[in-house]
Length: 451
Image 1 (cartoon, helix red, strand yellow):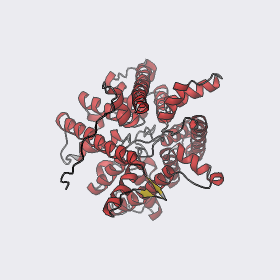
Image 2: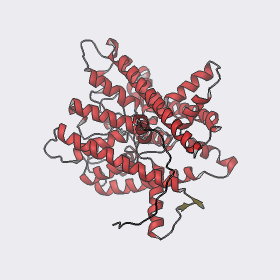
Image 3: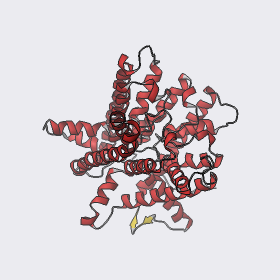
Image 4: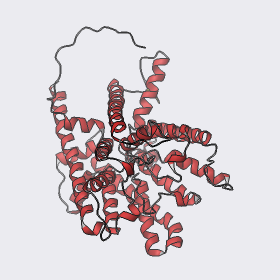
């Protein structure tokens, strides 16, 4: 019991440090983006818009109140890129990397923060996983840059072509959603090559470093952890189900120009299924999508990616666990099992609590925004709810509300992006002033009517 109490107190302290670290990063980003050379001459950016952009980049969301390609200079765009990179991999990753470069010993508290930020089970995994985080990030981003350069360099020339290749590769892998084209990837919806490379980077970033480590070590271990198995099953299932549903709701993408090949329509539909998994890049206006498509996308945004990845949302493992929990209950089974393993009751309780807290946060945010924001003709509640889910899932898609947010609306979206990136448990622990307590009394059990 004392051990549990000590753990709770430690998690409180650790959560506050992690939240403080992300807040500090947002403040630094706000200061850098406020500098004169971050924007063109005679272009003024309100402080709330600078803060919004810094928060969106740090929380790898991609929601923007100004056009990234037009409003920011190369310096400003690189600041956004840097914030997204650090926000995606975790500032503790870069802190450890700096310690290694300086050949300094990493303290126990630092290792514990890395362990929590990367969702590791064992402290001994810290150093080995760090190698995979840095190595895989460099591999995918540099590889993606090279593959995109094959297409972009002939289009834009060597200098600008390499720049947009680098920028787009980083933002895709980090699932950030910022672009320097001005209209996301709408100009490239006819270029299946660019879309395929982008999807590979998005999936690679959203799959999670622990899962990648398991996959790369499979030839020696000959097994995958339960976490990796559940992640891969849920991820593949959501991709396939999302693709089929969007294919049906959009009638094989009637939005695309007449004469578009079947292959390109398929790639665009698949891209539409991949991007809500917190990537935020889009090849067609979301306002023109069917109501059914928007509903599917909102579900995908709510689920998000994998714990320990560059993605947000409630995470695939949470969704997968609750699906198996529901199936077990319907079959009258007491244990929730998958792949000859039984999920712990603590896991199930934590997943249920996460869903409940996320629902409360989303409900309150939606209610506030319905009172502070203007909903244009032709739209209903989905205009606000879509934005709320996009911010919480750190996705970056919008039906157009972002550009017209009031000051209160921008603050609400900033908070949602922050909670979505840091994690709802970490955020609540950091804000809570309660003392960790362990009850010494257990009352008699009694059932109530459900359903």
